[in-house]
Length: 492
Image (tube, rainbow, N blue to C red; front, side, top):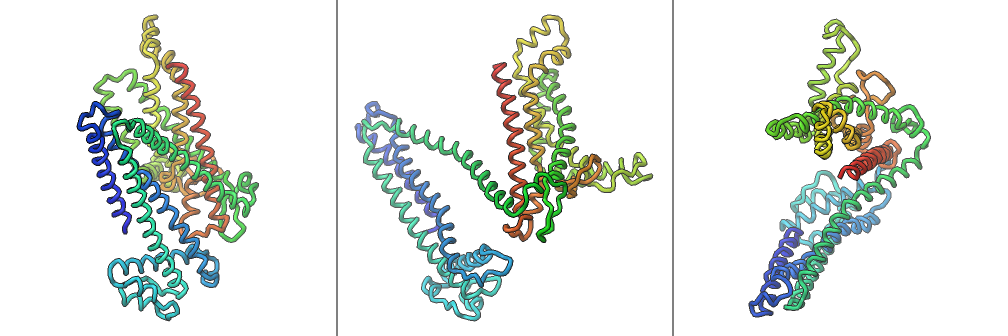
């Protein structure tokens, strides 16, 4: 049975359980709902929860575990001679899954029966042609060993799906029947439902934490594999980034880290003054109609996809900077300092434009949080509006503004598309903002693009770079949250 059908059946059982539980509660008091401990709807919710939640949890776990268990069993059927030299077993398993999906499609469409699939000759010399005659379209010839493994894969999947359907339906019916039998006038349905909802909320809140832990652990394990193949001293203390996939690569993070911090610094130089001045104007000087129009318009910048900013950097800002600083006598200033449109300055300026709404929105909220009594006291002592903003409001809001700037910095450090299209791909140390450089995120994308072998340090280095970037941005976020929290404790 398809999973979509199973979910529809669970939804129908849930709806039926709600209606039945509500009706049974009313019937237990002959329609006088005042004699019930809880509202009738709570009795319906109780039956619906016990019919849906356990069955849905088992379904989700089964769908996650079944492919991994089947892959582990079927992979043992593949001989080592079938694995191409320099490759790994995952490529052969992808062929096995592809053939198994084709066989399952043929069975579901009626082109083949399950017995015909099981009876296919694994020793045939032209399996692809035989399957094609029966309605299974495959892109290449299939080895007999692959067909045998695919047959086993399809059989295990079918058996597992059958068992999953039975277990989930039995669990849903059992939960429905048990909760329905407990429905009577004295049953504290509201307490049970509220505890159940609280458990679901805690579980939902835990998913984000568990996901973060899972991401960190997955990156950590691959980083350990990388450092088992590559010297950590070269990674942290070297001066050259030169992967060549020949075993003699120099994989130092320092040139990438320099490019990342340099571009982020230029972005902050652009974003912080503009965003901060915009926040001061919107919070202290703008009228309500102007603020109601300007603030949403400014925050539209935050909703523009970063790939659009990348195209803007590549097609508009980069050529404009070349016209100003490059092309010798043909340039606007007669200089010849910039040879191409990709540079640190190109990416930094565009990234700064992207960060303006982050700085302005956060700073505006922080400035508005400064108590009005401080402004009134300053104005009452004879200070002007500008003096009040400069000497009272801004010092009071400074810790929160610093936190907002650090959050914007962490956003800049993790940016990818603008850097890919605007900064270039050269890893080096340089103070010239008109030269091309690259960042950590760009190299992560580059190292994991294409036909990668996860047994080489040139690929595994992407996980070491990612973990380093994660630690860097996490530290900035923790520092920003600490500063903002300290500010709130002082003025709330």
